[in-house]
Length: 303
Image 1 (cartoon, helix red, strand yellow):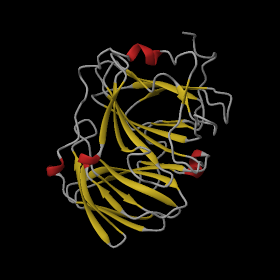
Image 2 (cartoon, one colour):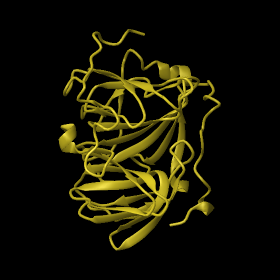
Image 3 (cartoon, one colour):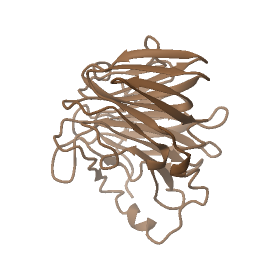
Image 4 (cartoon, helix red, strand yellow):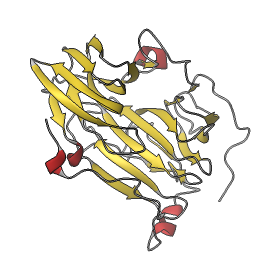
């Protein structure tokens, strides 16, 4: 395999260490305006016991996703109970979809940390609750390339207008987002999508690494970032991957994507120098540490 393009750059616009993207009540507040693009957004909100937060969805659709804790979401004249989870490393969670042009009230009795994944959109879909049992847990790769993907709002898994969002869990020492791939052009086999990575790293002083290499499109993003708990990486364009988890520290990242295409689809192009790694996976076992967990039985869910 050939080496990545040299020199390896540091596009500081695209790596936001924990705290740098904070705004107002949010520990993370990435908007299309602050990211310098058109569609994708992410907020992360910490609420204390008996805390609450109200917001208007505006011109965007949003998913309220518990990272830890539980709560209730009131939207569109309905109130949905979120069972939630202890942490992103312990279980799949349920979530609530809130449409554009709506008012949302989020409340929690025991406290929690909530991700609000958003995308500017055109259609106004109904508010909905999705139980954790309906989330598909997928294992990708093999050996040290193995990772787990919780496809909670993947294209084809849950209906949104523009928003695509998934969770990825990479055991310590493994590579994910590999082979490097891109989705920065609208063409056959590829869709143009802006992407946000939000990281949580297990264990004290945990870390990982994220590579984004120039593809010749857009900003020509060039980044090698050491990522830690609460960091953000923006991917407006470019070959992104690998995402590397340090040994002994499982890595979680939340991917939020959206783009201008009429067809809401995740179509990617693998880097030609590394695409052959997919052939290595065939017939080889997945890392035995995976899955870290599976979706719960439907009988445990409550709306």
